[in-house]
Image 1: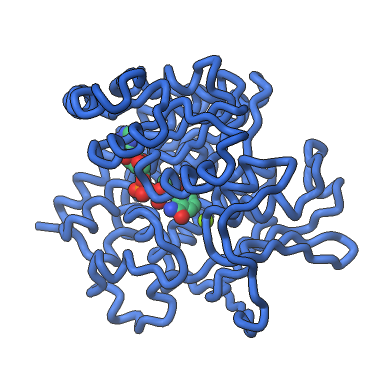
Image 2: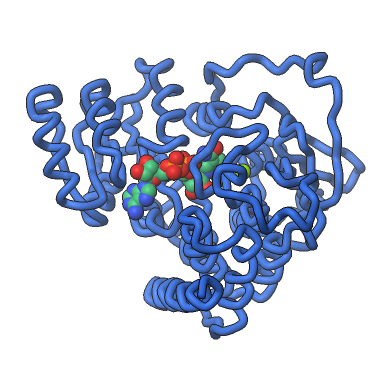
Length: 393
Ligand code: NAD
Ligand code: MG
């Protein structure tokens, strides 16, 4: 039995993880479940799974949770805040940590799991984008295992040779082809983009996801964050990663080899596939996902991304090429801008403006320590807030 802690169990990835675990209850035990503000769903999950711990992001919600599960999950201990999240990542009972908190809030607990040498199932790409080398060093130092949950990175992981510690080139890999659906605005007239609402941005054609990543998919900042994520996960540079728009989201990514071969991973667009892959790895088991029917798919289309339509993708590529804390700044500015767009304070097309101006206005530092990374994350949030106030005025 492997013990699992799920950071962000009430979110889209968290709920899908519990669905996969429910199919393999002989193999897994839920050690801890955590949530930000959805007390009701965490109550339900605690009653169903009887975890050893449940964590709420703040103490007020933790008290509410404690009262509500007192009789129905009497052995579940309730903790609060970052110290609680870090504790449940480090427990001896925890073998696997599903890192599925959205945004920078996931960094400290995911880093705690890395330092504690756990198997990390990484959905929270923002943590890696923020802290890059520091995070990868923590994984290596503690011999933790890092398995990608992002469907594209999980696909690439499956298509790469099993040991890439010598680098991609020496293993015959020439290029990674990172697929993207193009999101809900792939064919929207450019002049109409500024009028797009949060509801339209969150209506993804192929995937059902949390609101932040849905907006990121509409701007294609998500793909930009994924280029950065791939650089760290697979020890490569952005020039070795080509983004390919593939509207059907059936091919989840591909790897090109020196001999002309291209390996791809295909499947129905359902996050339970990468989640099951990472839970079972190196074995395989049922994910509850219907088998792919190629006759039903019939066509696979590809196109090059357009930087005029998707300026966020260009900004992310520039940030990773520049290095240092530039990706930390990009990520923080984007989080603030997306939140502001979701609250109808700025227009859809302002998201890229806020990110670009924030990067232009700040200095980039060497991301040697967590303190430097957190300080630049904070400065970017303040600067993005100022830019938003000016835009909204
Ligand atoms: P979501 O919004 O549905 O869920 C987020 C989870 O994080 C919730 O459980 C919430 O309670 C928790 N959370 C949010 N803010 C928090 C805070 N400040 N402190 C503690 N907990 C907090 O998001 P999601 O779609 O499940 O995405 C989660 C992560 O997985 C993101 O980083 C996203 O980029 C990544 N991801 C998601 C998908 C997908 O299909 N949903 C695919 C690939 C990658
Ligand atoms: Mg993805």
